[in-house]
Length: 253
Image (cartoon, rainbow, N blue to C red; front, side, top):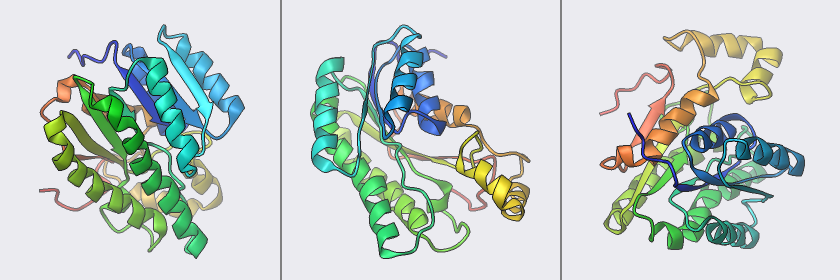
């Protein structure tokens, strides 16, 4: 199936490793020009160089999504550089299970405000796109009880709700909004590698709950994102697409 992504312009945050990097790689392979950001200059430079080898225009910067002014200025800047924004993927997350006030504030600033501020800055460009799409990276931790109470779970749940409500308000402007909620995703240097090496009982217990018998890969999540972001999904908005190998047990009606 032709996704119709060639020639589109996308902004992906947190795109130097893991799920964000896989999303950027797949979009670039489909002919999408990209703007990416992360917190480490060397990782940004490496990612930009690799992505540019796919023959698309790529720009990347070190950006702190919790810094509203510089974050929004960056999005406005890359929107001009790319000649527009068709796709916005807010992927950055604070992660973790810090239950202190600082942990709650960090997740709020990075996950929620990093999403809402990014969308706010991207909207002037998305409004002029013929195929505008926002794909929010949420988590199955936000739709079903996972481990224990923690900011990450609650904040990701908030993103799913906000994404649904945005889809209603932005649809008349031709802007689709969807979420992708990954289950456990394993990759080198990721959280689940750390858990496997340092908390093997938690890792094995989680793995045992996945009917497919394995964790997902960043590339599998990227394919879900690319489809929802593409004109091939033109009728789909307000969806939270769970990609978890059967890890969640709820019935999604």
